Every structure is written in C-alpha cells, then in structure tokens.
Image (cartoon, rainbow, N blue to C red):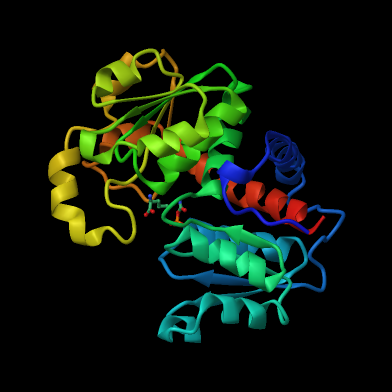
Length: 298
Ligand code: CP
Ligand code: NVA
C-alpha cells in the first residue's frame, strides 16, 4: 500500500514504474486482464472545482474494477469544521483509498497518516503531482526521454503546478526555466530544496529561446480569486503566443494543464494550433492515474 502525496517525496524509480505501466494501460484500454481495485470503494474528497481530475479518477477507478464515491467538502461534515484527522479515521474504516483535492498540503498528509489507506494528492496549494506525471508522460510519448531537454514554464511560477515541475526537474534530469514577474517567482527555499538545473527570470523571451517545451498554467489559481485584478495586471504579457513559440526550438511542444483562459496565459490561436497535444495531455491524466492507482494498491 502506498500514497502519492507530492513529486518532492516520490522517487524517480517509482515515477518511472508508473510511466512504464501507463504505456501498457493506455494500449490495453477496454481489454484489461486484471482488476486491481475489484471489491474496493474509493472516495474522492474535493474542496475545489475540477473537471479533468474528477472525471479521470472516477472513470479510472471503475475501469480498474472499483467503486467510487464523490464527496464534495461542502456536503460532508468536513465543510462544517470536522477535523481532517477525524474524517480520516472514519473514512479509513469504510473505504479502501482516497483521492483528495484541497488547499493545505498538510491536510492530505494528515489524512494519509490517520486513515491508513492509500491517499492520492489530486491538487493542493503546494503541488499537483498527477498533472506533472501526465505532462512528462505526454512529452516522452511524443519526443522520447525528457532527460537533457529544456522546459520553459511561463506565467505564475509560484503556483502548485510550477512547484511540481521544479521538483520533477532534478529527478528526471531536465533543464527547467521559469519566466514570471518578480512577485510570482518561486520561493528561493523551494528552489534550494529541489536542486537540479532550474533558473528563474522575468525575461520570457530568453526563457523560451531554444526550449523543447513551452508550458503554462492559469494566472489565477483556485483560492486566489481575491487577487484576480492584481494578478492580471502584473502577469499581463506572460503569455504563450505565436511570437513566443517562434523563439522556441522548431517543432517545440506547447502544453497547458487546463482549464485555459484564452487571451491571458495563452492566446486562442496558439492553443488551437497545439490542441492535439494539449487534449492528449488531458486524456493522459486518465491513463497515468490508472497506473498510479495500480501502484498504490500493489
Ligand atoms: N488540470 C486539472 O487538474 O484540471 P481540473 O481542475 O479540471 O481537474
Ligand atoms: N494552478 C491551478 C491548476 C488548475 C488545474 C490551480 O490551482 O487552480
């Protein structure tokens, strides 16, 4: 039994095991010989909105033979203040695994500790590990090993998705360049903890130059809505568009974790020009997460 709490604490060996299993799981969709979640019920406990993560986990759990229940934090006592450690000890006696989307990383870790069941981080304020595993899987499916390649992250360099990219860089051995305005650059302490070949700059043109992958995420992450006006003002210009793509390596991939806000972090024409990659990236959430579930119960 294992939990997936953050890229920071995941070994390269485990991530490679998950990636290798994903190739087979993707190829054999609809024809799986084993049902590793047969007889199990998993809970999805979400305190934030979701389309991709929710649907891919619900479908994935069922395709692996399990049953699934969606628990919106507003509908369970957690939303009225029941402590996470009590919720964990109740659910741990009733369900076989949990997938949690919430604010504090410590809540997911506390849940894993008190529940004693496999627990998967489906996004916190600190990390989005399932997303980054699907992103790297998508890159490698299209371009081969990511080791030695250059990834340019444009936009909010201090968000959960950027953090997971930072922790992935040293482990997978790729160069990560982050272009963000000063106020939204990753904390130095995170860069120090992660190590690896990660650079941060306010210069998005230099960041994009010669990159193998241009990547972005929303400027206003869930929970930051009160800062929307300020964020838009400061991050305007930090956009993936045709001019920026021209600076990257010819044939560079463009990816976005979605949902996308056209005209902000990416423009419509660039998103549509790279829609095949971006929506395959979204589809790969399903395949990668089935591999994660399989890994978690083995
Ligand atoms: N990328 C992602 O996690 O999407 P959702 O918020 O729709 O789950
Ligand atoms: N950084 C974004 C990711 C959405 C999938 C957020 O936290 O809202």
